[in-house]
Amino acid sequence: MSAYRKCLAVLQGHTSLVGQLQMRDDILVTGGSDGSVRVWSLSDYLAIHRLAAHDNSVTSLQFDNTRIVSGGSDGRVKVWDLKKGTLVRELSQPAEAVWRVVFEEEKAVIMASRASRTIMEVWNFSPPEEDFEDLRSASPMSMPDQADFDYSRPQSAALLSATSAPMLQADSSDDITMADALET
Image 1 (cartoon, rainbow, N blue to C red):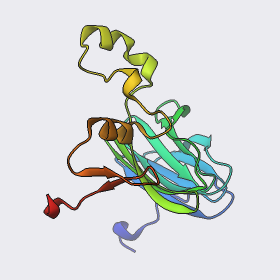
Image 2 (cartoon, rainbow, N blue to C red):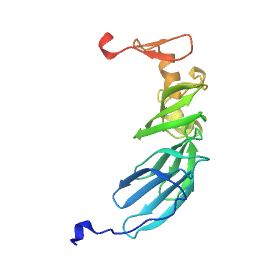
Image 3 (cartoon, helix red, strand yellow):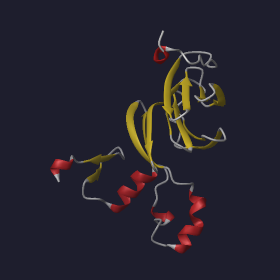
């Protein structure tokens, strides 16, 4: 048998179905129905971290060089430190369930079920508000005043509704309706 068809390792650790996985360089991150997220080394085929991530199935995960973002059927989205294997923070308020999470740079999109409706929320990945105090004094225009925020809504929706962008309209359910790009 030629070398390109050789099984290099069998990784074991999850206690039930593994439905999520992503590979990057020599790192593999998996998420299973057991609620755990596992980080594996593909250079020595050993587990690096076992994260007790969710009360139920891991429904979505993505990672980059510094962080892992996981979503679960428990309705939570969590941000983990890839190197340390520690919880950094929860990204949103718990939903009924989280179907999908994707991120790039400082934005994350969460597809979840809230109030029996499927919604997509765009979240800012920036550090929590208290980490911006020094930046706020150095550059007063860099952050909107706290009085302008509706913290019951995701930060991005609060910012957009406060600026009354021409493409956005609030409807009676407090959702923001976005016009198609071709309608502007």
